[in-house]
Every structure is written in C-alpha cells, then in structure tokens.
Amino acid sequence: MSGFAIKGWCPDAWRPMETGDGLLVRVKPRLGRLSRDQALALCALAQTYGNGMIDITRRANLQIRGVNEAGWPALIAELVAHGLADPDAGREGARNILIAPDWAQGDDSHRIACALMARMGEWPALPGKVGFVIDAGPAPILSAEPGDFRIERGASGHLILRADGRPTGSPVPFGREADHLIALAHWFARSGARRMARHHAPLPDWADGTQSPALARPAIAPGGSALGVSFGQIEAGLLARAATSSLRITPWRVLLLEDSSPAPIPGLITDPTSSLLRVDACPGAPYCPQASVETRDLARRLAPVVEGRLHVSGCAKGCARSGPADITLTGRDGRFDLAFNARAGAPPVRTDMDPAMVLAHFGVA
Image (cartoon, rainbow, N blue to C red; front, side, top):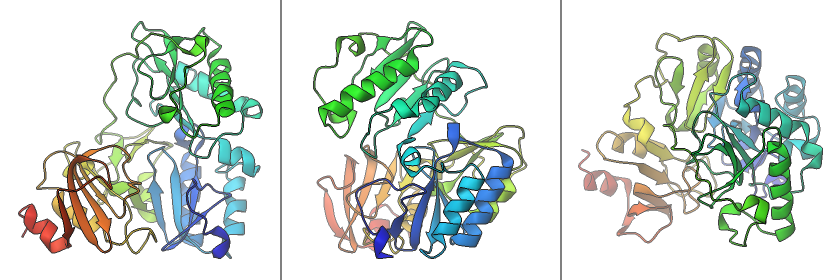
C-alpha cells in the first residue's frame, strides 16, 4: 500500500491514507446529511470493502477504515454511485464545508451552503485542511469548531463574515454571503498562508468588521433523536440499526436522526451526562502508525473517575482534539506523558508512565 503512505494531509475518498489497519477512506456527506438509503449503503460498503468500522470526524465527516488497496477502486465507484463522493477528485478534495447540523430546508444555513457549493468552480486552490463554516442559525453552534472562513449570526441578529482567529466580523448583505466567503478565500490563497487562525496579516477593509458573534448555543448532546458515539467510532452494523431515518452528522460524535426517536440501542449513548462524552481519544496503536500506545481502553477506564475534559493521544499530533483539555495524556515511545490544561505534546508534569501507573495516579484499581 505504499502508494497511499503519504502523511501530513487530510484524506478523502479519492486520496485515502494508509493506517495501521489498512486504508482510511473519508466520506464528506453533503450538508452533513445522509439519507437512510445512503447510510445503509455506507454501512454495507464498510463491511464489504473495509473492516466494518466507521469513524465520525471533528468536521462531521465519516471514515471507512480497513480498506485494502485492491478493493479501493471498486469502493470509490460505489461511493460515487450512491452520491457519497464527487466523481471529480479535485472537487471532492476541496469540498470542506461544515454546516450547523440542525439546519432546516430553506433556512439561512441551508441557503448559504447550497449557494457556496454551487459555485465551487470559483473557489481558489486552498490547503487541504482549510474549510468553510456556515453557522447561520438563531445563534452560533459551531463556535468551538475549527474553520477558516465563517458565516455566523452576529450579536445584532444579522449575519457576519468572520475570519477564524478574529473575535469580530463584518456584516454581510442578504444573498451576498457566498460572494464574501469566496472573496475572503481568494485573499487568503494569495497570501500563501496555511490556516486562517494563524494568519495575522491585516484583513481587507470589507472583511475587517467590529461586530461580535451572538452568544453561542450549546452543542447538541445525546437524548431523544440524538445518539452519541463513544470516541467517534461505530460498527457498521450498529450504524445500520440506528439509521431508521435520514440522519445528520455532527462534529461532537453525535448522530442526529431526522424523523424518529429510537428506542435505546446498546452501544450508543443516550445519556447526555455520560462520562464518555467528556473524553477525546484517537485510535492509537496499533491502528495508527504514528501512535506508540493504546488509547481507548485506557480512556474508557479513566472516564468515570476524572473531572473535566480528558484527552488521551497516541502521539503529540493530538488528532482527536486540537485544543487543550483539563487532563492530557500523550503517548511517547510506548509510555505516557501527563499534563494539565494542555494540548497533546505540551510540556508534562509527569513522564514515562505506563498504563498501570496512569491508572494508579487517578485511583483506578
């Protein structure tokens, strides 16, 4: 599988990434939504061409794991046939749009996202991790989620254009939101920067506003038609049982059913107070070649006893959580470093801890 072994970029359906359990193929549902037929097709494809495991990412995408190189061409053909991937590889790679998952047909979020996708031919070439956020509900719900060029509800009630990393934005005339997003993307592309949040050059006057976003709404939590997925990984068979209607994918490891409130399904989280919702843990070893430690079994044992946010990372990259957590365990050379109020890879307060030492430190027998 050496043809897919490149690291340091975001995979997609046309550019899978080699991991410890085979190729990882990312699927980007349009508008963050799967019809029931698409959901069932995705599950069947994960079982046929992968190892039956599906990831939910922090950008509300899905990843089929364990695909072998020989089966990938047939998989991509099936994904295109089911409307789960664009037949054009360049468009598929560029289509990085995170939309508020509770959008409704014809509302501002839906209207703007559709307009932006319809004009993909006008987008500049952008680095693979760069994307748009459409958060135009009654108040922002994606404020904590990364995204470079943002449309949000302003404190005044009007929509604003905000560059990620800037606390304020500029008002946008109704119907011109896609114009402004594309213009900001072109300005950014000309700068040669890699991410908007780390790009500190003065914005153009039309994008350099003083309007604050409205007070953010809380993220969608499990309960009713919202089903939580621990660590953002689900067996395809379990997802198929849960997909009793069309569903929305959220960046919070929660699936949102459109038309039903299912009975509790073993293996999915329906309790909004579940300790697993406070834990971020990447796949870890042996599933990721970057990781030197197992992560999720340890995270599951720690979750009930630690307070605050817990991040268990297989390496210093911190793929499961880019921001700081109250407690952060980072794998290094088969052991763990422990830090508090820190990102993965931050200077630790304790080093060289094996899992037993970590458990003992937190009083887990």
